[in-house]
Image (cartoon, rainbow, N blue to C red; front, side):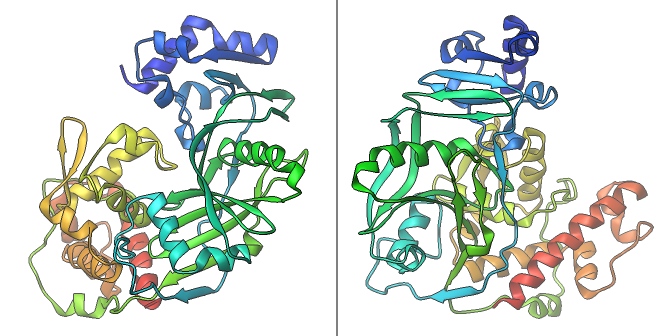
Length: 409
């Protein structure tokens, strides 16, 4: 039983919608979630972005947050806050210490590795304004109770498991970081507010302010976004104080060189033509799979702010580029996919551009002559003229992505 089906069964068994209508909320336990026979409660309750909400919740204006260990409150409230896709700040270039050989800034595959790279390259001290030490990392139970309210639904939080990707303490502040590989349009306040309130209580006697940040590695950029968690107010991202870094790297993306070649198409003609506009997510998925070379679709979809249906679009993109195959529900990188995923950023971008723009529709669009819906260049893909117009949106979005990448080098 998949996650969507399991949640539909849970709502029916416990008559949750009626109980929310009558009482304002419904509390469900991990045991009740597990009893339905679907994925483990930990997976079922993983709702890090609005797009991760099961359809039975989103369709009825519902959401869910933990209030105690193994107890979740369902009601009509919005626990997500927005993040801007593009930073307006100046990119600060930093060098990576040549003496460090156990971290590879050219191959960032985990949130912790991205944070460690930021630490040794001096980004963290620059962002936090002082020397800091890593003192918090991983999961723990909240050591302090707190409460808040969303849309008249109260949340008395006690003993909930919290996770901090990186907690850095200096002489004057404690800095909590929620890290992501790739861009997220929104994230749940549980990932920010719960650690913030917990550690504020725990260090209150020491009179050290606690500050929270969202950190996103949007290859090749390291973004640090302060999140304001003011008393009696919901968290919000303060993009006006965002810091943006990039590690210096030799080489550049040369799109003109791509057009000077005239190769046979390198893409898979049996895969569907791409219909996923965000090429940044393609990069992020490659990064997350670079270590193991594989990931289950359902698990990978929960890492991003996309629906379970959309993960198939991104899987199809990787298959179209011959970078992955499907093995019984797992996305498995091909030898080429593994090679490309582990390349330094500039080499990776050049390799991906060579693949994408070997295809005639993409190639002619890059030249500035996007084929209209009646062009014969579309014929090999078996899509009608209305669909071709929509697919051209993906083509132009990718060209914009690669053009901006080339301009920044």
